[in-house]
Image (tube, protein in one colour):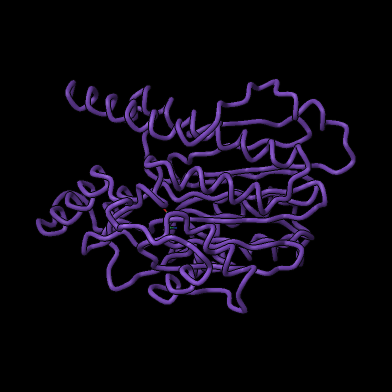
Length: 352
Ligand code: ASP
């Protein structure tokens, strides 16, 4: 037990220094951007997540928790500063997600979970709430930052969703460099896969679904509202541990994992993807606002605490609306979260 804690502490420190390199120093809670913008006419807001799941506070070492909070806070600072300086939400969203994709603590980009055949297959999507243009990629294996490729699909192609080798060929045509797949490999993720496969073989302890739930979290996402009133949402993931047969989850599916409409809201989902696809979760939240006049909070709560569980799924969403209201709802034990708006709200947290 002692050794486990010691090892997880060392691992946290290692990952912490790794992630800290890619993210700048976190803002203090009384950061000038908030106070400067409090009275401005056009609100700005940003919310980001690093996945929802069965993480338990008592099983997370203090150093690992601190490492997560540090990266979340640093990424938040980067995104909020872009908006505060008059930058556009698409830049805030892609900058935040790029930081999280580069950090091996999260299940996206480097640090993605492993498929049954011990590979990393990455999915991502992005949507612009003003134009409702969208881009997505699924099952890519050699793209360092899938969110940037999704953006490229949105802006530079007539398509919405590109998959596998075709998506990588498009990437090359857009000047992306293809990575050696070894770049994505993180040993602890590989061990998680092997444990899940071992447990599958022995059929021990828990029901298959329970093991699956415990073995995935760390998808990343971000939603931002800029000074022009545009809402952009994006999501990036490695999917679920031990996924087979080219399985694709909700993250690259517009309307399920990601949705944005500047008149209603922007949403990024995380959780058991099959249920989020069946529930058309991100669009459902927008539709409840548009057609039933629910508030952002009411819509997100209804979907996450009633509609998704009624199907049998679990997970969470981050969402914001045109007024800069922010909602972070999850029906799992924890979710990695950070948010800030020009009305003075700022939060960075993992547990309820
Ligand atoms: N939603 C992702 C998927 O099903 C996984 C997650 O968010 O944890 O691929």
